[in-house]
Length: 339
Ligand SMILES: [Fe+2]
Ligand SMILES: [Fe+2]
Image (spheres, rainbow, N blue to C red):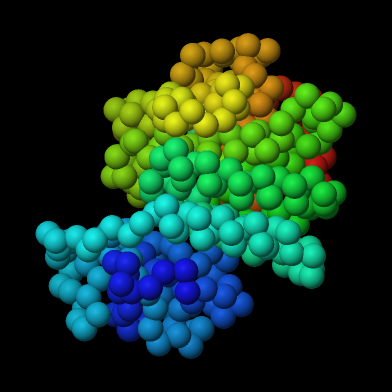
């Protein structure tokens, strides 16, 4: 196990699971039906899936759950989270353990390629989840080592982008989205920048995986709101590129141009983006690459207010209605990459 109950986690019977609890599945992904081993339960169907897997007890993390986690009784509806929170686990140790797990899987020569990508993906999601929980200098530095191994895996395998669609999760949590965009943007960067030695792909990968880092400074009630955001809430969300850039500056991690990914991934080719309404070539090529992967993943993920689009539907919408947002030839390479 990566963590024990002594670190603030609780073991509870599956019959007491509720929507809102943050569950941690047994460590081997082969022993449960979920792509990602740690997540907040978002529907009764997920609880049923856990039951169907034959599990009788699972670990829950009360600190990351939005409802009380009681082992012996189901709490009354509407009851509040307990005043006393369990001691917070050491996110640094968790990130370090998951970094090793990501590297080990990425460098494993015995696993079939698609299976290997699946294990790397699920471990990377768990690692980014922990980094976003405590995005300090050490955790960002640690995660960069794992991201470098993931980037090397993508660079060494010319077919990674083809089975990406099958291995990525479609839940729109910041941590799953971060890893989806990380994978997609590294694949696109590889296609576009492959003839040049002037790019540090490891740093670039870190920029893509951490592009939404600034969301950790936005209230969870806005980030996790199960509905469309009001104008005021949207204004708050629009602060996340600058906040992420600030965090990375303070941590002195990533090169200047890779920090720019975080700042510019919502800029749009026609000047309609934010925070600085940059246009065309004013947006760094890394930011332009990230924005395509970012929009595509948002469209192909389930949101509380709409079902996800199929890949071809998302690409068609981007082409027909959003083309002015992107650099045309980059978008065309992205379509080719996924076809
Ligand atoms: Fe973003
Ligand atoms: Fe994003």
